Image (cartoon, rainbow, N blue to C red; front, side, top):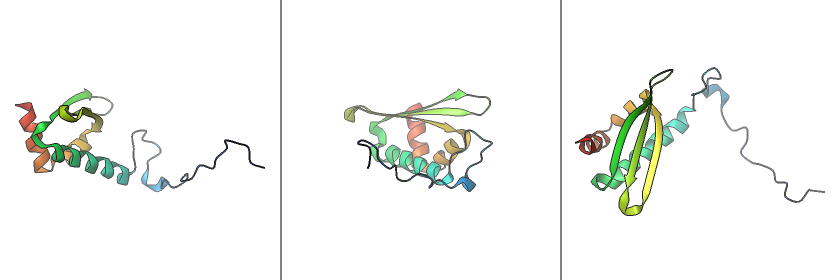
Length: 106
């Protein structure tokens, strides 16, 4: 007989351990990182110049970490994402994101 309130948790064990480095506590699966960057890029481009976008460095050691803030006042929306140097550079490879970020810095 099942105990009331006990549910089987599905989806466990689907993480590919070969993609993760167990020695690096900051490692994230490459597909997950790509989904995060794609989502962030889409939101930045979608809101265009109606947003406030800022980037600042939070940590320098042991790894450079940057805080990216996206605010859309008319939607009462704010997203804060922490990125390492590689992820930030990959995000800035897209011309639309780079233009909007340089626009917000001026």
